[in-house]
Length: 132
Length: 137
Image (cartoon, rainbow over all chains, first blue to last red; front, top):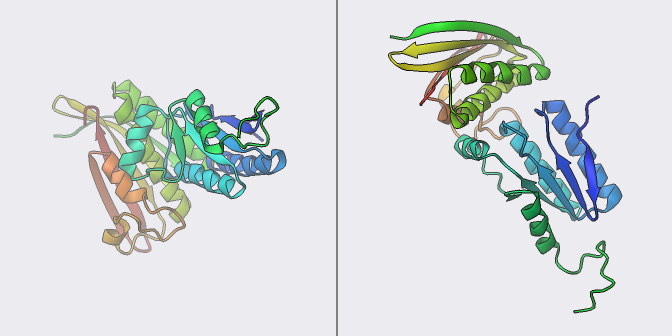
């Protein structure tokens, strides 16, 4: 069965969606991600949708679900790279993705996560960092 | 007067049919030179309606047509199912209303994405939804 790969980068997980998500694939991704957050203790999840040309209400709900589910496991989710046409369509459709952090690209998403997690992130090597 | 330039149809009976359906719609939208924003709106609308058909009627038929009116061309999509029908169309067209476990954005949201939206439904017989998106609409 087809799967979306989840990459681990330090205390973050990175998912790049390159294919059109049909329902089962999206639901599998949701489960895989939550399990992965639990297993790795990741503090943040980045979902790159820059290659996604369509986000309908189903897919929007999956993104919202992932954000809420990771939050209760103490990890924040940031959706990055949304195409402008997708943003226009989502809002007209009535889906504002409230509760989901978004950023323009992976880099900005990453710094957003770092800001959210603050300096007391135990998973990051802080040996040289003795400031209070 | 509306002229039909081409007509194509497919059945949507499984969730795996939704992506091919979107791709077919995209093909015709690209062929008539529809811009990316209108394309995205049309394909998203098609995706919503195809999913609705699956969820409430176990699938149905999709007709994809290229139409023209004067100088303007567009894509017309018809989603016909033989499902339970919609008892209260006004209610179904309200934002936030859903009998299923969805967000209830499907119908009113879809209507906002297209230029023309027509819904006919007979309880016990089925529902037919026709949408039209003009190339420059």
